[in-house]
Image 1 (cartoon, helix red, strand yellow):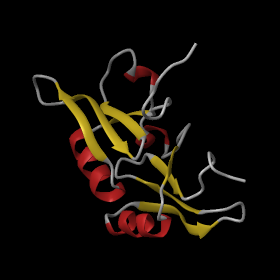
Image 2: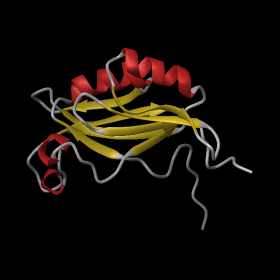
Image 3: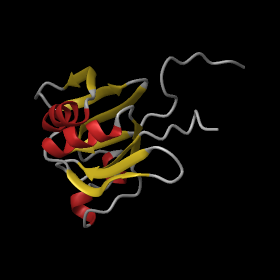
Length: 141
């Protein structure tokens, strides 16, 4: 059986306490682009899709529903995470400088990696961890 996908087949989904602010910050600091933002009647984000290259992240405002009760916000668990979104970027050093200038909390400084490429880790304003690197696991020798 064959499936035709245009982008990534795995899309991380996240919840933010202020999804509108998170969307704006993620676009400004990390270079994401808004593909879609759906709001409820109160203007809260029910579902948003942000793209970076052929990748995507989906997010919404945090809410007390069945799905939301299965998730923990980093602020509720002493800044810890159970997973981290990893994003492959072409110019990692420039991306690092952009994120740093936008106020990203750098937790792993930019470094060249002995296995190839470079990378850095950071947190967004709500404490979600992100990893950005130039290492492309799909195109390695």
